[in-house]
Every structure is written in C-alpha cells, then in structure tokens.
Length: 491
Ligand code: ZN
Image (cartoon, rainbow, N blue to C red; front, side, top):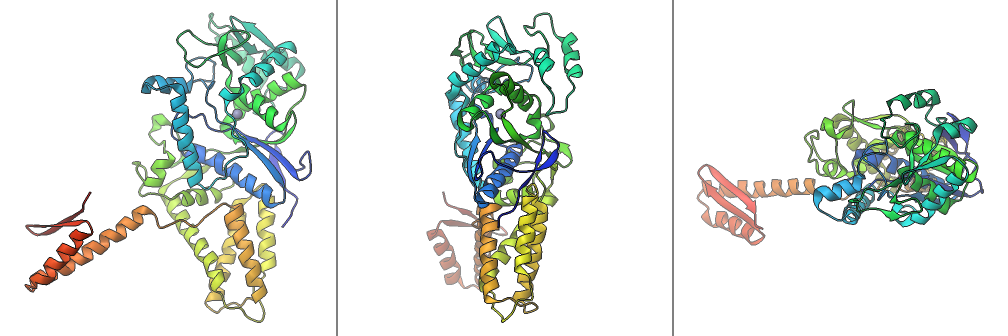
C-alpha cells in the first residue's frame, strides 16, 4: 500500500514529506559501530530503527542503497582529539593485533544483527579501507581555507567556518558557548580553538595503526570517514543520514561542516536520529554496572536480568516505542513484550485456520489502511502495533465464532499480515528457546524418576532398574542418594 512518507527531519526540527532526489531510489547512510567490544543494547536500537526504515522504504517500491559503516580506526577514547584509539587500546590490553580486535567484534556484531533479524546493509565500508578518500577530503577542506595544519596534524577551523556558515545548526549548540571554552585550552594544545576538531591526527611513534599521509604518519579524524564514505557511495548529495541521537554532536555536526567545506554544500536532505535507551530509568554506562550486551540479553546472564529474552522479544520491545522516544528497559516491560509478541504470532498463525463465512463483519481494508498510515507517519510503530492488536482481537473473535470473515478477506488479511509482520516489522517465528527446551527435558526426567521411585516403593525392582538403565543408555546418569536420587547428563 503506497502512501506519502512523512519524516521528522532533525535538522529542520519538523516533519516533512519525504521526496527522494531520484524518485524510486533512496540513498541512506547510517553510522555503524566502532568495533572494539561486544554489541550492547545501545547498538540494537539504531540497527533496528534503520533496518525498519530500510524495509519500509523497500516495501513502498523503492530501490534502497543502505550504507552502514564499520569504524575500525580513528575513534579516540575521548572527543577532544586526545587519548588512544579505542581499538588500539583494546588490542594493547588483550595483546592482540588491532585487526584481530576488529575482526573478532565485527563478526560478533554481525551475528547479533542476524539474531535481531536486521538485513545486511547494501555496502558496509570500513574506515581503514578508505584512506585515500579521507585524505582527499581533508586536502579539499585545507584548499578551501577551513582547516589549518599544526605539527603534522590538521584541524578544522570552527571559528573561520562560522563566519560563513552555521556551526551548531543540527545539535542546536551555540557558537559562543563552544568558543568560550577556548580559555580552557591548555598551553600545549595545537588547536586554535577548543571547538576545532581533528581532520588528520599525527600518530605517536609507538602507535600501531597509522598511515603515511601528506602531513605526517597518522590517522584521519573519526568524523572524516563518514563524510568520505557517504560521498563515495551515495554522491555529494543524498537522501537520508541516520544514527543515534548521541552522535548529533560532535560527530554529525562535524560531518555537515566537512561536507560544506569540502564540496561547497550540505550533503544530506533528511537527518534522522533514534533516541537513547535507559535501564530502569538510568542512563546506560559501563561505570553504572547496567551495561547489558546483546549476548547477555539473549542468555539472561546479567545481574539485572530475571530471565533470558529472545532476540525477537528485544526487537518487538523496541518496535513498541517510537524511535524518537527514549526507551526504558525493565524486566517487567520485556516480559510484557514477550507476551505481546506471542499473542501476535499466534494470531498470525490462526488466520490460516479461520473458517470463511458469506460476509465479513470486520473491516480488513480499514485495518490495512490504518497500519500503513501509522507507518507512513515517521514510522509510528506503536500506533501501527495498536491497530495490529485490534486485528488480533478480531482474529480470535472470528475463531471463537463471534465475528465473521469472507474467504476473500481471509486471503487479504493473510497476505497483509505476512508483509507487515515479517517483511516490514522484521519479526520472525523463533524456535523454542534452548533454555525452554532444557527446562522441558528436565521436567520429563524428573517425571520418569518419580515413577521409578514409586516402583521402588512397591518393591518392583525390575521396573526401577529398567528406567535407570534406559535413561543411562540415552546419557542420563541416575545416582541413588540417601533421601532420593540425583541425576546429571553425561558429557
Ligand atoms: Zn558516522
């Protein structure tokens, strides 16, 4: 069902009708992970938000080129262009090559993304694979007079840029406030202004990750890779740039300034930002002990988790909130999501088993229209899901004989649900979780051993031994102890 897509543009701070540069083709760039640790909940939200956008735009008949980068060099431990590269630091601590760290966490990120059923992007470029492009962009900015060289590093000149352009327009920061920090600059800083940021950073002697650049052996500044790679694959002007709202400043603000300085105009037509995740109302952070990785989420192995939550429960939970709202993780909310997802999936399955009547007492066309209207309104998934649950209610009522549906409407509903639930929302039917399966196995063994205990009590030794021996044959070791029995699975 094709509808005009309304998108909230972070830059203009209002909803706009989405008009791609070339009708039918959409170019979107999303900032991906810096691969120096396991993916956590904070990575899941942008991944799911922009996967949803990717799927939605495709469902509307567009060809979409979706670029999501991997940052494998250049992201320093702090935003002030000082300190170690995050990947190099991890490599030093673990006595690995930096590229071993990159490989390990890229693979683990991909595995998590597959579990969450996010589609792979069309291109996944890496910073280290685009040194020439980054150096070229830095050269252009220098040529255009918006950067300066200092001791082998190149910095972006925020004050100079601000004479001609509006630095801070995306994040809403005021230049005066940014420049005021100048006084705090230590005497040793090479920067003219603390608001300036590195485009190229000269590397210390002992640093492993560095490249031979025109100014020194060094690395590009973190913001540079996204400007260089988005331009390479989407052109100097493209439709959508996305990312988490924590990237608005300095990362995306710097990207805008770099594009304008290098190419003479802004690259992005629509900026989209997903909001952040809180845990039990608190900001997520390593120091707060509430930093939950996706692997911990899926296995339940974190002190804050009462149980394991499946990838689809996490995905469904995120879809229940609008991407621009903050989302608070709690066991309660996740357990509710688990139940909601189960109800939805059962109803989708039930549609195939409904009996057709002469006439429908339910309005399938209106349901479809309501759901797509919500989706077209800046991906309003909470409203879309609310409508879908009205549909769930009817499906159950039709099945119970309280409502009726025609054969034609059953087919319409089936195909609509398949499209919206599986293709657009990206949910999938999950196999019985391993943990749940183990639980059932345990209950079955306990039941057999209870029967064996009863056999022993009535001195039916043959039956008791038979149960023990046959369990042993399939790898369950039973031991008689003082007041009953113990069992374990053989290795
Ligand atoms: Zn980026």
